Length: 161
Ligand SMILES: [Cu+2]
Image (cartoon, rainbow, N blue to C red; front, side, top):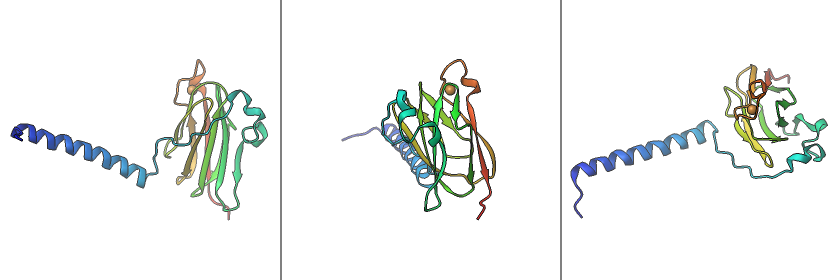
């Protein structure tokens, strides 16, 4: 089969772009822990307060026996609950969040946390905070008139053991 030399050159260019794109994704997935959301677990958003995990007095940071942390949160117009979480540095954290009403987002700068919080589903992500300090947790999906004021705080503190 005859392929025009110019066409052949462009095939190499396109092939290179595709290979580069795949390499970037593999790098970020393997080295930076950035993945597309993959946790498909459903929940009735209208009955979060009746569920065991997302009832008001079960929200917040829970310590597991292996030293890792489970953080349970609820996103609702227009805030995150609890409003502030405190986690020790360099500790594995599993964050689970559900929406009480509409679509929300959750973004924490300087971390790999960037989730869509879709009503009816539990969003889950694993992270480890490696910088001390106070970081905002921002809603990055437009959810209504109070969206601009929807944020919470993550305080990363030194390990105390
Ligand atoms: Cu919002």
